[in-house]
Image (cartoon, rainbow, N blue to C red):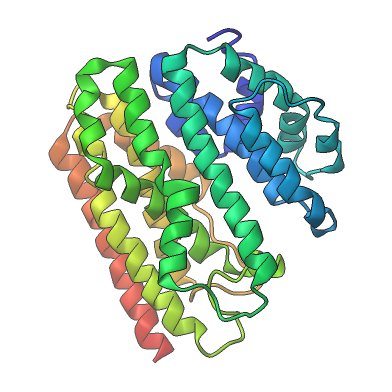
Length: 326
């Protein structure tokens, strides 16, 4: 891939903790995954733009989706309507035409999977836009709607991750047959976002769960928290699908699972979602887990034990929260 380091700074600024997962991978897998991330993050920046640009979001997202396969989409001046507060996101939108060019310059074997997964992710963003444009109630989504949403905006990434790893190393081709585990890997991480970001999402008119003030919220929050932990139970097998000597690949999917489980534990300990509260794993702890993952990456037993212990702790915190609600 040409100019592979060209947008590494933007990637680091926009991908936050996920940057660790990309950084530890060998270049053969890292580069296509990073390119897909930048394309999807640019679209997500548009989707999450301030409300004054509501009418512009959908047509721009559709153009971005079409541009994945059509090189003749014209000018991108419309992206200047969007002024994200974060510098990295601002720079990413300005660089979008060049990032898109990197996609079209890629080999077909890499380009086509990226086109497919980013197209699906944007479809999820469009569905989300339409859903909350039409849905004015504050009752939250049904479990069927949430399952669809979590697949479109995250679950589809798991099989793509497996496919890219297999393309970069044929010895990993067995990953492609483990789609359920890979899908639940993506979904588990999105459930964390849904549960953690309730206050911020609701400020923007997105009621994935019932409104914070509604009496239905505690029951819905507990129910979907259990669904999240079940997803983590399946997803915890994902790092173990990589052979023991693929430590970097294991670490790349181990870290998001660890941070996701720790975020849920902190959220449950904090009493669930509240206004002006957003739990976060400290930077010091992140690097502590990174060191632990590096040390234990070749041991199936140790990795499995760490994830099982964290999931158990999160379950215990959830059960305590449930008793407090009652």
